[in-house]
Length: 214
Image (tube, rainbow, N blue to C red; front, side, top):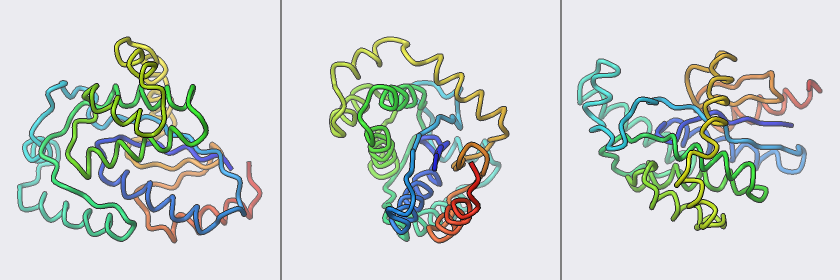
């Protein structure tokens, strides 16, 4: 079974969704052989490197006030706790394009599982610790922490390498109709949308596997 996890580092529901999906896959265990790919999506592609204040950004983007934002964040924290993800304080939103370039590199040149591990590390660094996922020192630290070659990571970040690949992948998923994340694409044809609970992911994956659809 091929799973493409389309998401953005700055998306809190993507952190919830990835953990929930991992729990579902853990329940299924060896019943399925899974080929897992992290795919890029930018919620804020025009975000400047210095980022923006989170409250101001969300208020302007979605037309909601600070109280509504606080209520939404509380709901997300509760959903995160249910799947083992602890949200910390996030004061700013930053550009995530270089994070996606590094993830693409990890998928191309890394060992099996390293791209997935880097995705987890990025989500934890930003949503759990409030670190800037666009800062090269943060990206290098996380790459090394998951066992990726730090010097090669430094080369990638210092160049524009994999930039075209990321843009092409983003365009592909947008043309495929993905306009919100997380989006879980199974076997290139089945969509599971949003940060679903583990039992929803598990049921959907089992139904797809039982249907024998490629």
